[in-house]
Amino acid sequence: MNQPVEALPVLSDQLKIRSLEVQGAEGPLAARLYTSGDAGAKRDTLLVFFHAGGFVGGDLEDADLFLRHLADDSRHVAVLASAYTLATDKPFPAAVEDAHAVLVWAKKHKAKLGWNGKRLLVSGIEAGANLAAVCALMSRDRGGPGLAGQILIMPMLDPGLTTCSMREIQAEPELLEVADKCAEAYRGYLPNAADRTHPYASPLQSSRLKHLPPALILSTEDDPLRDEAEQYGAKLMSCGVTTTVRRMQPAPLKDAEARNECACRCQALGEIASFIAGLERSETPPAA
Image (cartoon, rainbow, N blue to C red):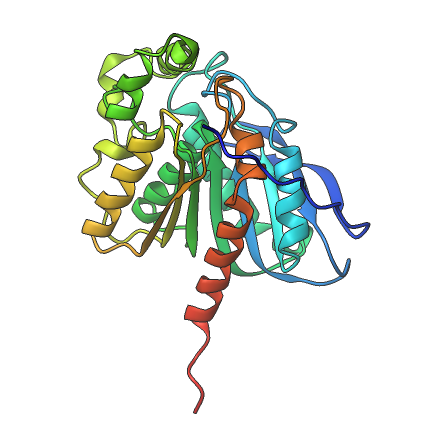
């Protein structure tokens, strides 16, 4: 049985959302900057976020409520949400190349974002979390930009759809739509079957996971993506990457697009705030 979820707190009048353009791999992309608190303050942390939609859909509006609360709850963090090329326009690797290009752009345009350049994090939900995980690999492989952490929320990491949690829902008629949408999404994103084992398409299949930034991975009790999220966390830990894996309370996910609402109303916001606070503490030099 799904547990009841708490009502969200009222957003403060200090929350500010600004529309802007960032640079993708092949041209400008729509983006939004979320900040709260003192308007003129330069923040130590910038979190770059990529939306859900199974690589073939979704836009900046999808995670808007989630990001409003994330920025309002963590006022020392600026949140930059960016669009990326959907597979309906260009399949893999267009989206991941966009995602990495946005990180490079952000590092070069700190002043425009009210960020001092100290700490850069990457995050996303579902397909966006795949892009975030891949950005960590690409930044390592390409010599930057340096990332302080990666936050993967109910990530899509297994194009083969082979995990137990994914196979189990195929026996539940009311959840078949979720599995079908995942399969359809991967067909659109990875039309070349050979790409399905590429580490930049399927991080879960990568054999090179060392020297990646600390990770927070959030799964949900009744989400078909649960097992691949937790398997990826276990692989990161086995490679010496500092990793926190949390399984959040059940939430209704019969709608394949419900993950933004789930993350917002479950404990994701608190887990993210704790993870960022831990990164800050780890960077603080010990007292003399």
